[in-house]
Length: 109
Image (cartoon, rainbow, N blue to C red; front, side, top):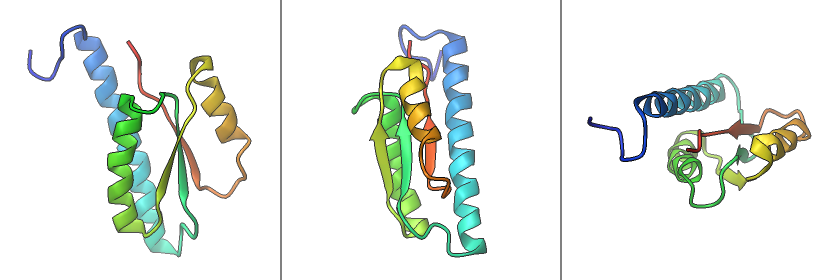
């Protein structure tokens, strides 16, 4: 079946598609907010639950290049693997409430 790699089930492929779609939608919403005012005035931090070189890390780096072009601020990828995503979630929770941090997660199989 096209689009599904060996070892992936049809359900895993759909789940990954949904997660990617949700992540892109979130960052496009952030990009549209930037045109309303001078948001963001400082770099955006994206926390991922995968280690460096994982699918989430690679996806966020590609997305970050495009966001940097449109927003004028870099997207800083902060890999926080472990704890079933709780480490990244806690880091996002403890971040200052300035709307420059976002958490991203991809299903691992």
